[in-house]
Length: 429
Ligand code: GDP
Ligand code: IMO
Ligand code: MG
Image (cartoon, rainbow, N blue to C red; front, side, top):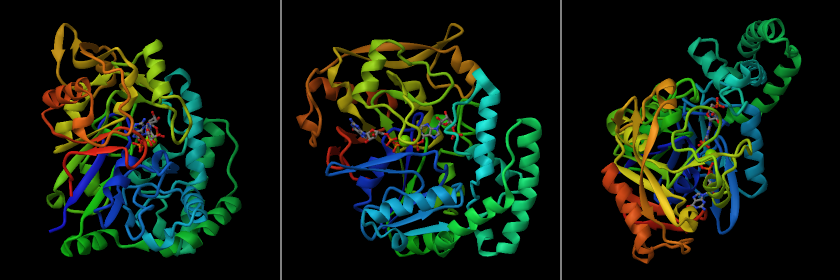
C-alpha cells in the first residue's frame, strides 16, 4: 500500500515547506501542488546549491519524481515558463516530470494590474499582498469568468473570453482606479506564445492520482502559504485567497478525502509573517532583529523583510485540529542558538479570558495579548546536527515542551537549510 501524505505550513507561510518536501520525495513517486500560485516561494538547498520554486512542486530536483499541479493552483503562464526555463538551464528535465491540470485558472497581466491598483488604493489598510495577481485570479474562478489552462488549447474560445474579461477589467482599471488600460492584442500574443510550451503538459490529474494510488505509489501533497493565511480559516481579511488547509488538498487535486493517510505540519521554531495583519508574538525590538538576521528572514518571492516573533502555541493548536495534523516538522531550530532565554507563547489573554487557540478573526486577534513561558537557551551551535541525541539538553527540552503542549509528535527537526541538515525521528512514508 502506498501512503498519501499532505505537507503544509502551520503558521503564516515560509516555514521551510520546500526543504522538507524535497527531503521527503526520496520515498515519493509524485508531488502535487494543490493551491496558491506564484505568490509562494519554496527554497531548496542541496549540497549548498540554492533553488527557489514558485509554481513547480518541490520534487522537481529528484530525477524521476513526477511533479503535478492540481486544479486548485492559479497558474501564470509567464511565471511558469520562466521557472521551467531556469530549471532547464540547470539541467533539470522539467518537461519529462511535470504535468498540469487543464482546470487551473490562469493568472494574466490584468490580474496583476488589479492587485497592485487595489493595494495602492487601500493605502494604510493594504493587505501587503505579493502583488502577483493572486486574489483577482481566484475571484475570476469563483465568479465563473476565469480563463482556464484548457482554454489555451482552443484559441478561438480563449480570444473570446480574453476580450470579454479585458473589456471588464479595462473599465475598472481606467474608470475606477485611474490606471492605464491593457492592450488586447499584446496580451493575446504574449499568452498564446507562452501557451505553446505549457499546453503539452496538460493531463487529467484526478485520473493520474487515482492510478498512482491504485498502483500503491506514495503521493505527497505540497501546500503553499500556511494555516493562518487560509481564506476561510485564517484571520480574514489578512489572508491569501485559497484554502491552504488540508481540505484544499482534496478539492485542489481531485483526490478523495478518505485516501489521505497523514498530515504533516511544517512549523518554524519561532514565528514569522510577511505582509500586514495582527501577529501577537511579534518582536519589534532587538530580539526580533536577531531572529530576522539569523534566520535570513527575507521573502523568497518579494524579498520583503519578514516580521519575526516568538513561537505561538495558540496558532499551532488551531492548525493541529483544523488540519488533523498527525505529525510535525520543526524547522530553523538553529536560528535560536544565540538566545540566553527563549520565550514560548502558551496562550493568549483576550478581554480578561485565557484563549488556547488563535481566533480566526483579525479584530479579535489584534486584541490578543500573548502569555509567555521562559525556557533556558542552549547558546551553542546546533547547525547541521542530524541525530536527536546529539542536540544539547536545553534544545531537547524546548522541543519536548512544544510536543507536550501540542500533543502531536515532532517527527522531523531541521537544523539548517540543506537537505541533509535534518533529524528524522520517524519517516512519514
Ligand atoms: P517555504 O515557503 O515554507 O518553502 O519556506 P521559504 O523557502 O520561503 O523560507 C524558508 C527559509 O529558511 C529558506 O531560506 C530556507 O533555505 C531556510 N531554511 C529551511 N530550513 C532551515 C533550517 O532548519 N535552518 C535554517 N537556518 N534555515 C532553514
Ligand atoms: P509560501 O508558500 C508567506 C502573504 C502575503 C500577504 C498575503 C496575501 O512561500 O509560504 P497574496 O499575494 O497571496 O494575495 O498575499 O499572503 N503570502 C505569503 N506569506 N509565504 C507565502 O508563501 C505567501 N504567499 C502569500 O505576504 O500577506
Ligand atoms: Mg516561502
